[in-house]
Length: 118
Image (cartoon, rainbow, N blue to C red):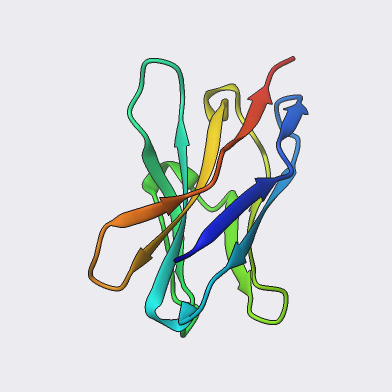
């Protein structure tokens, strides 16, 4: 069982930055991949980035374009998403998710709202 709690969302102007945090609790985390997803109104939930808890390997969606960085802190049991040069189209609810290696994302946080607007 894995529990996830996101924080750090908010409202920023275009070009601004935000850092999202996901507090992770559970055991055997080295067998999990952690992901950040986002969902805008009327859209499906899309993957933004993921990081493998065990070795730290990362993956980013194409739309990230080098603007975001995902990381995990094993000592603090946390996953972060550093977002820079934010655009209005980045506006969405951002969710932290966890999946066993080779499995589906079965664990989700409650989500945190990110709004990018001038």
